Picture 1: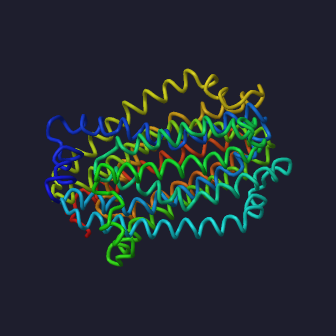
Picture 2: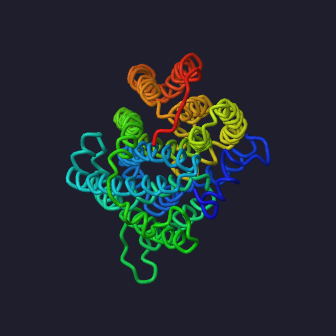
Picture 3: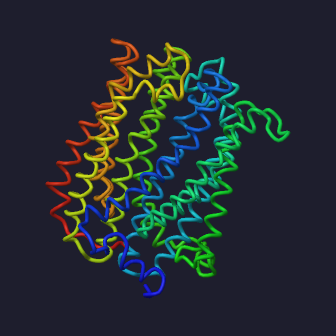
Length: 464
């Protein structure tokens, strides 16, 4: 890369920052990364709070019933984006701006087309999907209306989140945070405005939350593109990048080779959530609402773990691009230490205030009791999930995806789902949540074995 622009920035960001210990560099990168990942869910959380309190528990159950489907779609996007993030990080580490732009151009085209296909398929089969999940009949119509608007958002959000991943791959976590903050704050205005009919708007009910998400993400993405162009960022949608808005088959092959297995794994994780909610739905709409609240809280507990795993993958990809295999062990050690310090602190606070936090989403005392007991079962195990995410992330940074993916799938479908199914019939609703720590323990043991005995003994090279 040229020393003006991306090349100069590479001297000061990510794996190239030699001014402090690596764990401190990663920690500083993690602050906006964690906050940014939190903000990606904050918009949905804000809307859920408004819906639950201004419309009622049945409306919250209607949104919750669609949550696993949305999680499936976003998870697949994250998986596919992991391929382009690895290539972005390696090109950035090698200071190869031309390849960087070609990776971005190919990825944008690919993810936009995927978003369009997902939107069309989703709209056509919305009702059938929700019926298949066993959505309670008293909330089915609202769930369908909400879901169809969310599907319209997919082409925009696929490209928006891909751009966020590109920027992080270059060691920039601050700029994405700004625009994720905007996308999280706008629903605080849009959702109640549509529910209550502010400014002469019609009262749209549960559809308000979906329309708010569509508008917020579209506006934020447009502002991001304007910002990148204004500061002449290497990832700006400039003339060269526009010319590269086509498929480079060599790059796409690597994106698919890394991203599709990861996407498949995350889809199967999401499908496991569909299986879980089908188990939960048998206990009625109050259990479904409790599931929605617990998942909202658990998603925030996961953010440090997920973020540190992403950071490990990005720093690892940059090290491989720079031909610095000697730094990979330091990346893992720094990430694991941060996982237990940051994640452990957050989980401890959640245990102390779990009833108050669940009360942000739920007002019905019985539903609140269910949610609080379920949180007690699972929160601690997300530390193990984080450790496993770090190991799989660093291995994916080298393009090694098959075994980390296989292990992840085995932990979910070989342990979590069967455990949840069996125990739900034996001890009731709490048995479903015992499946989560069982899967996380299994996954960490298997990922550790493969990392220490196979991957760490190999030599790793840049992919493109």
